[in-house]
Length: 520
Image: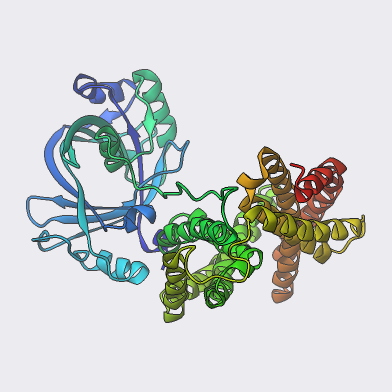
């Protein structure tokens, strides 16, 4: 049950006046732009924001607000942040009345539907107060030019967070439908007033003004150091990427931002890549946790691959003739249904005993520290290990690269990409030991990896389109769209193949050889 499917969507624009006096001009400014402004209604709202001690909701990209009303309190769960650069915030939001506010904290999520959704994706969660906001709101009905209906909210906010009290002002224009040119109107209002359009929530603004740092992933002290023994270096690398894995799990479970799943999957890949590099200096018992990563990576991969394929299909669809657009959207909708099935399977995997066991394995490994039981190379200097790893991995890349030609099969190019990825990860692991030259090589390898990844994604899309056409033999529109899309992907593949020799130039190969030989 993805959040964007489970919840209704909220559409609004937020602007920031600099003062209370400026806020009082909101109704007049909106009227000057041609909107019809109804009578103002003044309300005082008392909002309590909640989260768990480990910031689960924040990490999931969600905000939970308990609002006191005249009768029953109202609980609202919504996306905490909007995309950068957006003017109109389109965010999933679920609201429901609750019988009464919690009497004490920590407490489980109140309400029914919201509590059920949180239990479904997060499991048991105990909540604590994060901030309390008192909002004095002047609310007016609007009819924007063109007839679109909206609500104007002029808010004066007093916020209390971490013992600090701060004030700020905000103007919201909340849409009452999907139509209308809300973004254009908001930009005109911003230009006329000088008030910036923002995407931050009231909670974010309150914490920033109260000088309360938002929850963030802590990675201080996790760079490999030249003086490290192999076991110390291994645990620094594993801790960095395991922390990223854990940090992104709430966002992956909530399903609000596909980048959380992407980042969690990348952390999984780097952890899996770390095992063969550092295996000689780690305890044999650590292997169980790394084997578990292979299993969970398959579940994450099914969802992430469909995310990429759906986005690719819709982007490619815009490049073909408009007559194909309905058929393209039909293909994308079928992929979205497959994605929902894959996402449910991923949630089951993340909530399973097998995943809890894997998590406990990594926690034990990291808790033991570098002085716990290690492998036969645990005390070896990390610089000595680095050279051997890079020489072995670079030889495999060069051997594969020599076989690349105009007619190289797609699968061989995909294998080359995997070898380059493993080499790049190894260089990243040992980066501080290898010096500045390593950063340049990593950047160049990332470009080659992206190029080969785009080539492979196009090859996969061609195969999927062929399957889609075969499944609908009598659908002429679908077949025509598939033919147009396949031709587009094939052209792009040829462009990416042609760019490969320059991307993987002799200069890059020479840099890699110097790193592997210890020359920097």
